[in-house]
Amino acid sequence: MDLSFILNELGEEREFYFNAISPPIVQTSNFKANKVDDLYGLFEDEYSGYLYSRGLNPTVDILRKKLAALDGAEDALVFNSGASAIFASILANVKSGDHIVSVRNPYTWAQRMFEVILPRFQVHTTYADGRDTAQIEAALQPNTALIYLESPSSWSFELQDLRAIARLAKEKNILTICDNSYCTPLFQRPIEMGIDLVLQSATKYIGGHSDTVAGVLSGSKAMIKKIFDSEYLNIGSGIQPFNAWLLIRGLRTLPARLERCTRTTKAVVGFLQAHPRVERVLFPLDEAFPQYELASLQMSGACGLVSFYLHAQSRQEIVRFCEGLHHVLMAVSWGGHESLILPKCAGIREEAFDPGNADHRMLRLYVGQEDPEYLIQDLDQALRIR
Ligand SMILES: *Cc1c(COP(=O)(O)O)cnc(C)c1O
Image 1 (tube, rainbow, N blue to C red):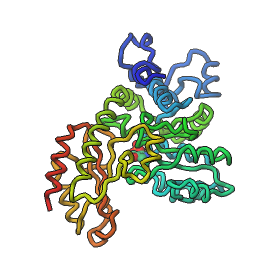
Image 2: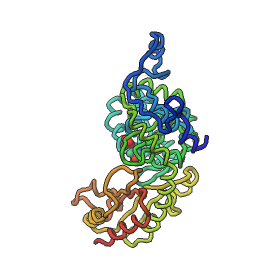
Image 3: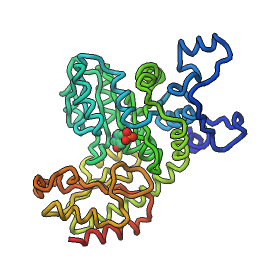
């Protein structure tokens, strides 16, 4: 299916809403039934039609069709956050006594689920270095029910060989889930590599304007229906119609935004690499990146997030750099129009700061939609502050 068709036409039945180009926000909680037997059918299977907007909603359905097609998946659900997509996808696929293998340092709220919530139900998780498939394999136990992946990860961009891990998991009947937030389906399609469930935080590039929190989960029709019938309806964490509409709007310009972001990121990476105050730059499609080969094999692009290590003797030097930026904003999240900086040392007290530990001197930059020269000038002036 053409990308342009997916973004401009798929799922949109304009003749049903006055030929409006932009779809309506069907802001309703419930839907009228004409026959008792229609209600009977919906009570039997809420996935079969419109009953109540905690389940299906027409505006959300337009978005679901587009997102499933982008992922190359049979079906998709959209949640009111990436974290709830993570929560539902994992919860639906484990039972008491099961074991999970996860990549090291997955996204914070996946980690909280593995360490705080699931152990209460006798579900335990082993972390493995996902850069080495053999270590994932070695961590498997007879009761391993799922393998949780995030490729690349959002700080150090560690990759997993998705095809190899999917093959290994299929042989052993283990479910695989991959967080694809960094790449979006435009740059990486894990389902086509054999991964069972793919998720992303739509708060990032799909929304693209830092005004919506949402998450996407894609997979087979049977798996998505299973999650809809239990976790999705029960937790009540589906996206609201207005937010779904904002994401449809975000999708229209996704390729253009990623294209511009790719060009700007290249320029910014080049600037940082050449700067004497920068010790090292991490970016998956940089030839010096340790997993560059795998990145070029399974990703068709990369942009936006770049990490780097600053030469610094104290936490104050990093603080002065961050607070000295005029245009790059200090904030969490990414994927919006605005460039952002996030220093690792924000989580480290002054007394605990160790300049010998490179991780303490690590910063994550998100490159937004601004002009490259505008950003480089801002970084340059802030790097001059000592
Ligand atoms: C932001 C993020 C999430 C969570 O998404 P929310 O929409 O913030 O709940 C999950 N994974 C990664 C890699 C993220 O960056």
